[in-house]
Length: 426
Image 1 (cartoon, helix red, strand yellow):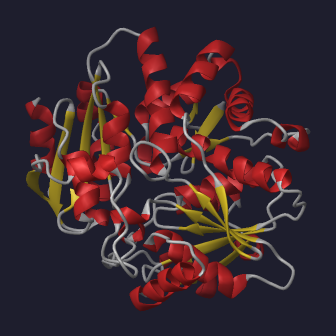
Image 2 (cartoon, one colour):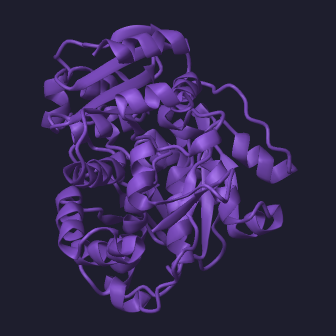
């Protein structure tokens, strides 16, 4: 796969190089030079999830890796289901939280780890540092994907006091080759620190730095696969309509993956951008003026992003055409009060949702038209968010265990020099 920077079309690399460096020079993000259109989408949808996923990844990456390497990586990474669950007539939830850390980030993080390990086996070098920022679930997925993986060190930054206690316990209790830092600030501060590190050539080279945030294109290619799975399960139910798909959006990598799937020929009627009160993108689509801003803490904390990195990729996909974006997307947001109402409404239908999925559902229902079929992405296990919804969902065993482990994180000011000192310690 040939990729180019969103900020410099002449900065072109192959997939293996892109996943190692994470971010392009000058702060750009790597995107495919061309998105292939699959001529046999119906045949792909008839395959089982693992087989279809292998075929799609092989087509996207071409001959950079052997067929056997990709088959092993994909099947090993995606060894859990993504069930499509009916909620009520005309509305379904795509549950993406059946992986080891109970959030959709498992798809991308596990695939990235296995692809980086493939690349590492081809070259001689020291330990590679995987630096990532998290607003909630990314930290756990990345930490578990790289935990104990020889030749890798994972470093996770997160905003102190702005993620749930359960989310923090999932990755900040591990130790080993995983280091975690509680940053005095918001997620945007964490993300800015990560980006700044990648702009330091000496640091990047010395630590063999790469990112497991959604700035890394491998994460997003893996997420393409579950959009295909949603359509496959619809076909199995005898449903031929192209659905309207609502994506709870923070850093916008998940939406970008869905749009890539659509570009390959997947029949999706429209995508719904669903945010909380961090309305940078909905406001842009309303007004035509893009204005990043400090994030606001909400119940749907993984979406608390005021300067979403991957919107740059979406702009590149649409070549900056605002009219085309508005035609392809529907959009809206929920306040915390409206999010709680959406959780309660789902509960009344017999479905317990997490706050992020509830935001997606709530916005989706505002935008569904007569006769349309709606799917919203349920991105995290509801037990991670004990403070939302009626009653207390039972904790899965994996969460109950870590909740009682000591937090091993170190405090860190939102200061680049302080982070560089920490990174250079090991």
